[in-house]
Length: 279
Picture 1 (cartoon, rainbow, N blue to C red):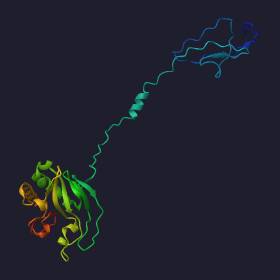
Picture 2 (cartoon, rainbow, N blue to C red):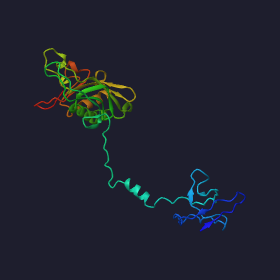
Picture 3 (cartoon, rainbow, N blue to C red):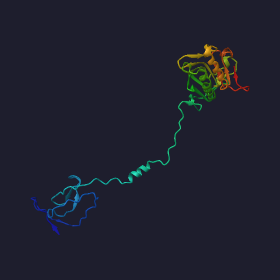
Picture 4 (cartoon, rainbow, N blue to C red):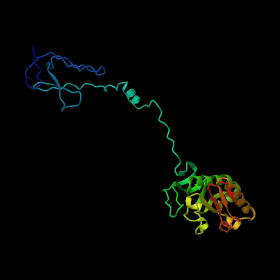
């Protein structure tokens, strides 16, 4: 069976032989119905897409005289499958909560957040009996700064913190705005007791001692061991601090102990069979 296409002024066209029964490719239901062609205006021909001509959806007849059909009205592509988002979401959900991270406060030493400073390498002995294996450099205790970092062991650092909390701060109270700083006269030092040649090694040479010469208040005023011992309110505060030191420390020396301690409190954690030595 053959069919001819009207010339429409273009001259006769070659007949097109129908060689196979064409079946349209299934389309989504949302696509509009194919455009109708007037009977007798065009022969049945093999259809093929023409990728380089015209807008998407345009169909061209494969014949010697090309003729185009009106473009098909295409709907939007089908939506995402309903379960796609669910699968993605499930992959991002943890079934168990992550464990909480517990972080220590930066700068804390000796396992106590109120003792601030840093650990230091072991200090080798310069003379027999000296040296500090597990030392720390303390910059503040119980919120009270030190005038210079004190190099001691942790037992001494903890004793200092206890003394400041239980003795120094209560003795000063709100006077001058309260305690701001301890004036450190000495901490670790490899030397004999009282710097006397031939004497036994001082507890300073073992990292077990600290000397405090004064207390500086928030308003800048100072309570000095040398200047205020036995003098009025400041003297009474110093006496209270000294008494409170005996307990946290095993040795407490100051004005009246000997000529070497008239201008500071010597505090150490040395152990004695007879108990604490406070005078």
